[in-house]
Image (cartoon, rainbow, N blue to C red):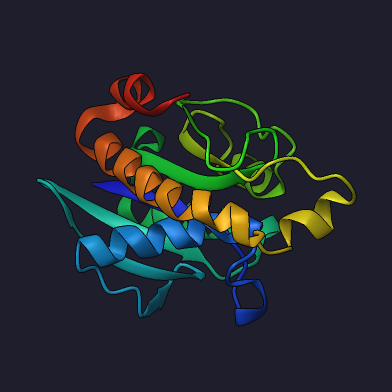
Length: 184
């Protein structure tokens, strides 16, 4: 079983913000694989189903970004998952809009959601798929809680599809093959 977590903030106020790109990718995966995300479990919107031959659990934490670790920890404990079977999808201001980067482990890179997950589960040895949202010119908080501009959405839509493809690839092929295929 694989656990795929998309980071974001709950509520319509945040729905299409840069910080919620993880939620948008989870929504695309759920749509593709007919996985209902209507249940609430583990402090998250939750759904389970199949991607290829593998059972997956999809999560969108409802705890707000900075406390995402509680949902990951609760689901991981319930399913007794190895952290090698965890993929976290998140925004990244260090990458150009729409650029992807997968890593099999590493620091939070200053991302509060990743930082909380690392703190709560006690390791940084889990996969993360970072989705570039571009660099802010002013306040980083205002930037990530802001919406993409119209010209950026032309990039973001196809990049969400590519990110969902990368997540699917990870499910069946693991991090090394996915990094070779999608990083860059």
